[in-house]
Image (cartoon, rainbow, N blue to C red; front, side):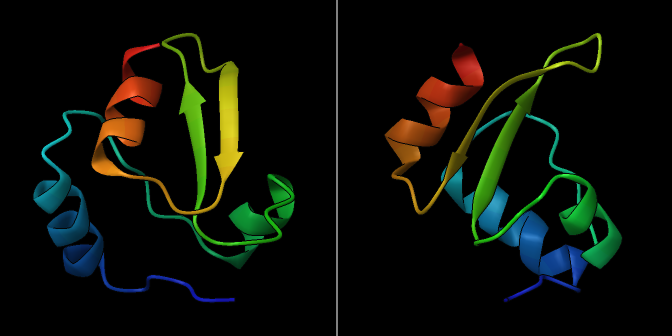
Length: 70
């Protein structure tokens, strides 16, 4: 699996997509806890900390914006 270990690379990726959502950088323990089997994996988590939806695989910028707005 590919892990982003550099926060700046993740920040640059998100900035390039022009989306306005918090992005958290995990590690192998987080991957196990969330049962992540492939990358990229997206989780939309609401203000109460509940997972609203998840998706595995690459997405377009429009797809990410739609997920973030749900």
